[in-house]
Length: 257
Image (cartoon, rainbow, N blue to C red; front, top):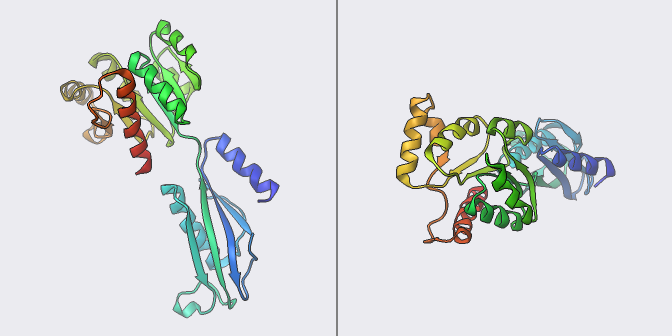
């Protein structure tokens, strides 16, 4: 990869933007670019570099856009012989292009830093998530100092916390809070973010009560359906560490689709 494209990849990831690297990996006979030629597709549609231009490159950009959506690499093969049969060119050869997505590190946004919250923070850090923790009790947050790998510790209002550490499409929210009233106050702010996953710890009855409070406050069923509650994979967990395993199993399952 050229130094300029490498710098673009690094800059995009530092800004929590996804990119797809498109590389010509094999050619046969006459083609526009040789093996090793590269192009980047940014999440805003911009491209850098080229894999050949024309109709073929337009198709690569379309495929790379789908790669941004699902985060999965893919290999494309094109014949550049006869446009009348659907080929994207008339150069006379064949080309294979590999699409490789680069995604920002996933963030685990942990709302609640009690016994379970601390266990989830420790496990998520070990699993190489970027860990952000919020709690409205500063004295509870002090206990997080002993956990390595927590990237940010936030208090104050949840609105201020989200402004300081924004929740994006690569952020999974885990709520391990202490009561319905707190959940009902936090969720409107969290539902206004693009988080692909919001999991809430608690019983079905607790969630039903919280959901009704939010509905009465104007929340739509469409938004409320985004909340997964009870959270976690059923493994008969009892201790905070076991519950953390259950929760992170659900988070990983969400990311794996």
